[in-house]
Length: 128
Image (cartoon, rainbow, N blue to C red):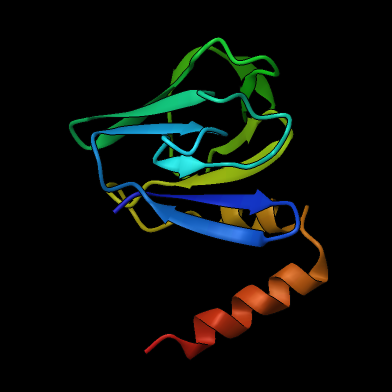
């Protein structure tokens, strides 16, 4: 299953499985993925599943949406793509074509503090 891994300020890394065909992202509590950050719009973007792939559409957000450091309004996502909603960073892990790209995750983790790395690694090791 595809996932979105977010780096949320004060929380660290948060993984959300994309288990719907339409996934709303934004600051409002009515979204499927809520990002409580002032640079994220109430309804910031939407992920749309078409077949085995996902596309992202920016919903005229105030601070924009970037994929791999390029401002976008609508684009198909690929495994390992780095996203930015306002100033909140994320990585798309598309589980349909292949497992999560180690390169994309490694690149993504480079921007996080060491404490977030160690917390996530310890949680991962505790999984049954």
